[in-house]
Structure formats: C-alpha cells, structure tokens
Image (cartoon, rainbow, N blue to C red; front, top):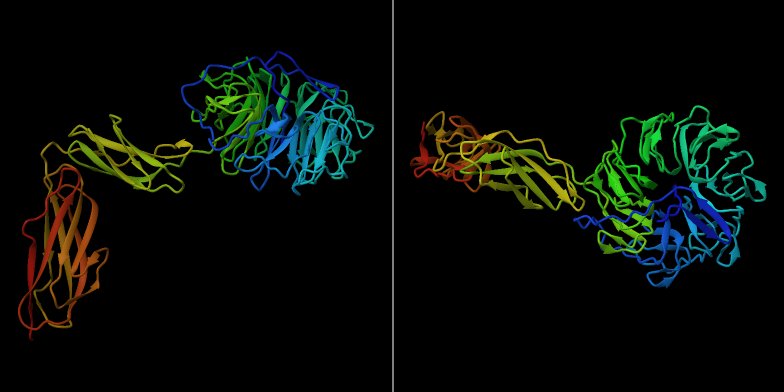
Length: 601
C-alpha cells in the first residue's frame, strides 16, 4: 500500500512531529468548491466521526479498517493517531496502540501485524522513532525497532516479507540511509539496499516486472546516487537507480499505484510526463514511457495525493482539485481505464483527500481533511459506494401492439434493483422493479418501426445498454390479429393400441407485425400421450406457445398419442388458438375439430 503526504489548504505545509519538521513541498491550493446538485454515493451506515485528519487507510482481510493520522478521538472515544474500525465503522475497542504523534502511513503484513510510519516518538508509552510494528491486537511488537531519525511518509511490504520505507530520514538504526531504506522482516536494516536519494520521498511501491527491478519511489528529489532522476525513479534490488527507466516527470510525485498488468499510475503536482501534457495524473508503461492512451484532462490548478485501482480497471484519485475534463469534481474522483472521467462517481467532499482504499465489496474508503461528503457531515473519513454498475441485459425481445410494445429480456445475474427499457427512435421508456423481466412501453406512434434496448441498475447505478431488439412495427389503431388453428390427423379410423400423430397448425393474419400465439389441443377420453414435444400439459389439454409468429405465416406443432380404450362411438379432437400482444387478442369462437371412429377390423 502507498500512502501520500498529509493534506493542507495552504500553499505550503510544515508538519511538526516530536520536534521534527517535515516540509512537504507539494503545493495544495485551497480547494473547497461549490456543492454539486447530486448527493453523491455516501454509505449512510458508516460514520466513524474522527476529530482530526486521516492520512492513511489500510483494510484487513476480515473487513476491519485501520486508520492513521492526527486525531485524538474516534466516535467520541479517545484514540491517539491510530485506530481500528469494525466493518460497520464503529470503533474496535480492543485495539488501542496510543501513538504520541502523527501517523502518515499504514501497511498490513500477511501475518496480520501492522506497520506504521510518521513523525512519532512513542507507541504505547515505549520509545519508537517514526516507524513501528503493532501486533494484531494493537500492542507494540517489541522485537521490531528500526529507529528512523526523521519522519516516515510511506511504507510498502515486499513479497519476501521485507519492508520498504520512504520519507525525510537520513539514518535508520544508526546507519546512513537517505530518504529510502529497506528493512529485514525483524526490523533490522537491509545492508544490501542503499539508494541514497537527495530529497524527500513521498511514495514507495513494489514493481516486479523484472526480477532485478523491484522498487518505485516518488517525491521531490532529483538525484539518486549521483545520477539525475527527477521526481520518480525505479530502483534495482540493491537500491541503485534503473538507468532504463526515465519517465521525465516535470514536478513532484506524491502517489504511486501499480496495475495488475505492470503499468504504473502516478499522481502529484506535475504538468508533463515524457514531454507530453499530463496534468497531475498519468500512466506509464512498464518500461517507464508515458502511456499516451491515458489522459485525464485534469486542470493544472490542483494536486493528486492518493491513487488506488479497482479490479475493473478504473482508477480512484484523491487530492485537492475541483474540475476534471470540464466537470466539477471536488477532491476525489474516479477515472475510466482510458483516463476519462467516470460520470457515475461523485462523492463530492469539501476539503482535501490524502488516502484512498478499496474494499472487496467495491466500496471505497477516503480519508483527509474534509468534514462533509455529498453534503452530509463526515469528519475526515467516509465510505462511498464505489462498485461497478450492472452488466447489460441480453436477449431483448419486443412484441408490438396498438401505440405500445411489450418488451422482455433475460435476467442479469447480481443484485439488480430495476430494469429500464428505452425505445428508438423517440426515447420513450418503461421501468420494471426487480425481479420482473418485462414491461410495456406506451405512447408509441402506430405504424412506426421501433427497436428497444434495456439497462439494469444496481446500488451503484445503471449499467450499459443491451444490444437492440429486432425491429417491430406498432399496429394501427383498431387492428386485431386473426389466428386459426387446424387439427390434422393422417387417418380418422383407429383401433385400440394403435398410435396416431396429431398436428395443430396455427396461422396468423390481420396484423402487420409478429404476434405471440398459443395453440391448444384437447384430447377425448380413450387416448394417452406418448410424445408431447414442447407442449405444456394440463390434464387432456396440451398447449404450444410461440413468442413471435410473423404475419401470414403458419406454425405446426406435433404430438403422438395412443388409443387405449376405443370401443364404440366417435371421438372428437379439438384445437384452438389465441393471439397475444397489446391490443391484439382474439380467441376462436368455434374450435376446429376432427372425429376419430373406432375401427373394429
């Protein structure tokens, strides 16, 4: 996890912790902004009520949330600078590290222990300079004491258990280490990793696209081990700068996130990367060249201080800004995979955001200096519904009627709240609450050809539209459908024990559009069914349904029966048909029938 510097609303911020001044040179302009009309996507059940800035967030596998910052209470209960929350946002009373000054970074190890960095001097009353490790219950891990001489602003855990730290320090454990160091799993200094960075480091991340290049760092530096590397660099396994990685960023980098494909997202106070215009946020290819397909169209009057990725490829950014691509976005936003603004996501917080974390359920945690989100009071920490909208419905089918059309679709998997159907060309629509999978669009013009698309909505909003239905033409006013059923049998004399194949042929006339048709056969006593095909059977009645029978076309359905008890007297097999569709219904008054006479040989 990468956590950036704390936010400020002034042009320059000096963070003092235990007498150590960490000058954060990234400028964060005063960005409050007007409230948008929408209320955002705030999680109403999550309200920890922290009384000071939240600078770092980390999530545990059990759903609990760790926060670090500059606060003294959470939910009215004393907690100094580090706290753990239950999944519902209430304070975890069992976890109380009691850190004596500001915390800027948090990371969770696979074993459940928690790493913290900042400007503190003690944890639980025990001396710890700027970096410490907590046990899973919040008590201090006494075996881990790296002793950084100045502030730690970023922490990342490598896959081998070693720990990367970045910040303002110049010594760790009494040995010279300037701004970046790597610790062994027990907290001792890794003597094989010596980067020598000349100025502040704000962000660290692991990058494993090559086995010998493992670490990304961002900050306000320009020199690493005597080589020019401005604001962003990649280090090899010994801490030396990777000479093949030169993104050429023209301003400080405060946040780094690595995508699953190895591409690197960066945020900060820059306006160009690789000679191309990229304001405040950019994406790099694995070799460090700028990804030209990603451009957020941010303005150059803000700063990006936090970045996180979602499984769907979208990118969350936080900081101090007010517009993206001409749209109002106050301090937090989500970008599509190509860098364009995701219009469906707008938490709208009133002050700077410096920490973002995603949860497995798609919800997004944001921390910073803000006191409202979406117009609702949320002090320094909020959770928003950040998941993706539903997928598109499929198999959309329309049946036209008089000034209307009945539309059905295949159900979308997931927690769907509603579906909306929209007609083209005129845009009329209907909405069906889940779990319904059909609705009727009214107010259509008769004699017009229409197609229909459907969307599904969940708690995160409406998803993309389906493929359009096949075109249908609404019927002129007063039109009716005439359908006729004809029963066909190969012979009308039958002996007990013999079988007979019966066909019911249905014809459609009198309408210009396809209609739904149900045709039924009624068998007399003395017959049993051998094969019924797709027929639905109720007693001696078997019915066949077709969703769309074109005008002037016929449909034939077959069943096979056996004579079981033919003695004397004729038997009558009757058939009927019914057309369905809005304004198009006609049931035959006199069913068609044939008679079967017992054959005595």
